[in-house]
Length: 266
View (spheres, helix red, strand yellow):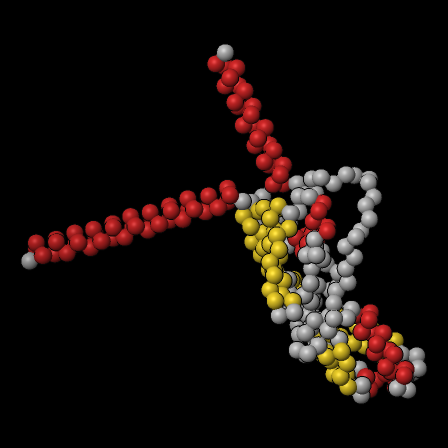
């Protein structure tokens, strides 16, 4: 009878351990395969103050477009995730949300998408009689995010697209380690003079509905460690402190002994 009770306890512990491991390892545990769902969280990145925009004006007649384009500049690409090369000089969005374009002057940019701003510039070029067939292309030049904590490759990542998700960020950082929490991922965002902190659960499909699922400029993603990792760190820290204390005591004892021996010889 005792053996059966012991076996039951062991089985319970094993099943509990497996359940805990599943919860900490698997993404989207409640998702159903081959069941289409409507994407309700449609997102387009908005331009913000301090963004740097690469704006290119094109026309069949190159000489007409040239006055509206800034010169190309070279860059090294060190620490940016990009190879070195050249790109158009950027237009910096000022604190009031405006850019200053050659000839056209100040244009409102903050709060608009790339497509909306491009359409406004095209309309301005046409309505003011500068270029009848104007085509404007805009790209973000300083869109970056930071991924920290329990990921394989924490660091700053430059984004070439203006549509990046939480899973994109985790993928770029080499995924969450075995000691990272998937059900409590922190996203820190600064917007309109305010800083907000959100916690996302990547183990459930509800993560797709979060306004923080699609990342914005300068977002910070932090993956917290599991309790096991924290416990190990605590034990290691205590061990280091104990070792340091013992070393200090031994060093002091050796010093005192050496001093006593020296005085004895005198």
